[in-house]
Amino acid sequence: MKITVVGCGYVGLVSGACFASLGNQVTCVDIDAKKVASLKKGKPTIYEPGLEELIRQNLKKKFLVFTTDLKAAVRKSDVIFIAVGTPPRPNGEADLSFVEDVAQTIALEMRSYKLVVEKSTVPVQTGERIRQTLAHHARKGVSFDVASNPEFLREGTAVRDFMNPDRIILGVESKRAEAVLSDLYKPLKCPIVVADLKSAEIIKHASNSFLAAKISFINAISRLCDASGADVEKVAYGMGLDRRIGKGFLNAGIGFGGFCFPKDLAAFIRISEKLGYNFELLKAVEQINEDQKKFFLKKIEEAIWNINSKTIGVLGLAFKPNTDDMRFAPSIDIIAALQSQGAKIKAFDPHAMGKAKEVFKNVAYGSDSYSVCKGSDCLVILTEWDEFKELDLQRVKRLLKAPVVVDGRNLYDPKKMRALGFRYFSMGRP
Ligand code: NAD
Image (cartoon, rainbow, N blue to C red; front, side):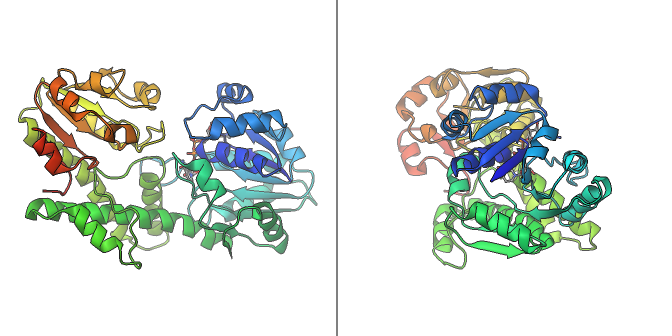
């Protein structure tokens, strides 16, 4: 199939490379000329395990092409995926102006039937807007379909997730669109759910909001555990064995971040409001997530007393492990709050320091975990990278000015940490 994917970010780039590896002819388009130049050389501008190799292989086979020329790409493709960003506006609503821009260009360039597919996460009824835009600008007699095919990949395991999805959602309005997309996804052996466009759009927002709710739920439980002396890990394990609940997304910590959960939750709340429903449950999910960061800051204060002029070593900046994505990472608010109270920050992240340097001011970066520990008044863990789990804790203790660890991701066993002589603080565990 001849496919265009518009937007070479986490979703567009991974989707484009994976579609190419399934034997399709894929053109990936981005407005960012620097990004496209780097991609043409086989160098992705994001860190995602397995992606660089996949891009290089398919560039070589000529199954994958990168360009800034959307118009030319539209003319030579049958199926066009829109995978541009849908960032939050200040009021939380999704900013759909990039989606509209792309839809307009597609409309003006269409000379034959095109299937235009929303892959970006968008509020319900966006498909209708895209259809209106295409109809408004398209030449007479040129037919098209609009479909919704939300993406569920997770950063850090994006390629694997794309190739092994739990399900594929196809929001379609014609048999033709259904046939094209079913054919495209046939090689991926998983259930395909065919729905109407609006239901497909809601499936994505509802899924992300539900997962965010699970995280906030266990974080709220962790507060009770902290206050009562119970162990949130035991509680989560006991809950998760119930198949109706499931084990996933029951890790207590400093809350969720990233480019999906916070913005999708906010956008879902706003679109619900527009549709006349006050989604109070999700407002509470948001609030618990915000509170969790404040609660963590209180733990740091409890651990080291005055924050002013203390040096705090921070391990982990990305919003989660195996990605360099800093968007809406909890580290941003936490470091800003510590700095506003006069703390000096030394930080290390295995892959996100390049992007972190664009976000933080006055942070000293270490070359590894141990250099961050050296001379710090306490060590704070913000991202659960595997390599932090493997640290030589005796060495950490020797390097720290005082053996204090405040662990926002529950990486270590509290009993072992205390036996090693640390004052160890974690989330919801005695
Ligand atoms: P991103 O910011 O990494 O990538 C978006 C890309 O679109 C950028 O490279 C940008 O330059 C490009 N772009 C913007 N306007 C353009 C235009 N007019 N023409 C061509 N390119 C344009 O975003 P992302 O993380 O890939 O997310 C994209 C969408 O997918 C969002 O709606 C997001 O919610 C959704 N999504 C993201 C994830 C994830 O894990 N990141 C997972 C599922 C869904």
